[in-house]
Image (tube, rainbow, N blue to C red):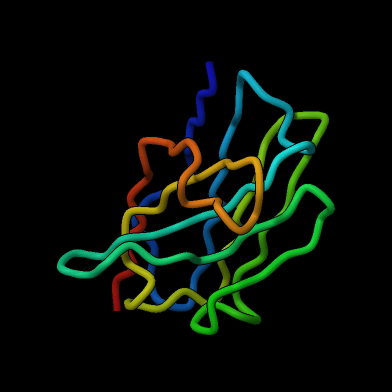
Length: 119
């Protein structure tokens, strides 16, 4: 059974940084596509960043140059380093795992972690 547990969210001032972690069990993260989505109040869920099993990464335009997704296969964990945070980054962030990068959103989801950026 696949289980994803996110951590690292919290309250941070604008311009600050946070690192989200997604610890996976029931699978080997290096063999799957993984990603981070977020959902702000009153808005649709959106893709933030994703990493393929081969290690290629893609980012939403709104976070390019500020966020970095990475994977530690030894720890079976995926990270999202978030720098230069803005109030618009406030949302619940979800970790997702899927067999293929193209169908990532149809995979397994974590419970989410709240990120709040104060201006």
